Image (cartoon, rainbow, N blue to C red; front, side):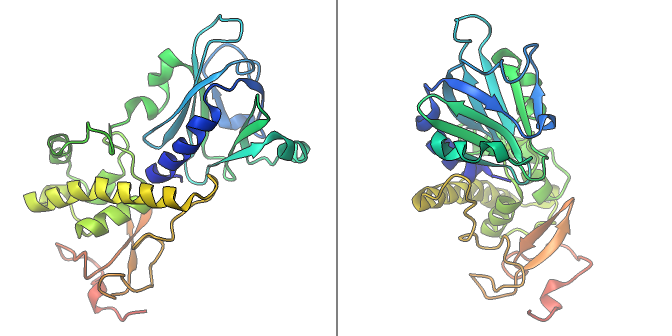
Amino acid sequence: MPELPDLAYIESVLQPALAGRRIVAARTGDPLVLRVMVPDPFPSVLVGRRITGVTRRGHFMRFALAADQAGGGDALSIVINAMLVGRYRLLPLQENQKTAARDPVALGLALQLEGQLELQYLDQKRMGKVYIARTTDEAQIPVFGQLGVDLISDDFTRETFGRLIAKRRDQVRMFLMDKRALASIGNAYADEILFAAQLHPKTFCNKLTAPEVDALYGAIPRVLKHAIAEIARRREPIETKVRDFLAVRGRDGKPCPVCGTTIRAVRVGDGDACFCPTCQPAARKLFVDWNKLPNA
């Protein structure tokens, strides 16, 4: 999925491009992706409204919409959870007009905007969700209304982090990916943060020493801000996922960039974690001793 650094870059592109533009048309390739939480039907509920701002919150993108063109009704929000493979595209309208008749089912939402511009949200697996809600009802959007502390905000202090992790008895990678605690870390950056903190992904939170908690807290903003800066430096189109600079994620079977040990993948919860057995040694005996296995 687009993770926090990806979305921070997307926000930086979409906010100046879209803010102030009026929606002139809207469509979807699959109505099941939409969650319309207002009585008015799609697409008419969106047409004529002006986008007043684009912001990232956790792993969601939020598009604030003013009251309708006549000045009545409530302010609305479009809130998108891209899930596993959702992505955004920003197109000149003339280019899109050539292909609009062949919109793929992957098209979750398209907003045609004044000024000959179109924003598309695409999702090949159709797992993501597009919520249309009154701004006052945003707390009712699943997960969005219960997100934890934003990890690159001033609210993410050592004291706050300490209170959150002190309550946990699960594995540290599971804690990092709990959106209701920390907003928000996905698979890729959970691996990168643990590598930077030199912690094995199966380490239990309640077994961490105070210096290890400090290392983990410090690694979170450091890794995320480095990624945000690197993605911004590349200036790729917003639909492009930039991950080739990551140290361990997606590099299982390859040498660790620090020590040369073969990076391994291990099952943690519902997903796989990539880690270096040397830089991130296990604090307890595990079923597999990766250090005794031959390098690939």
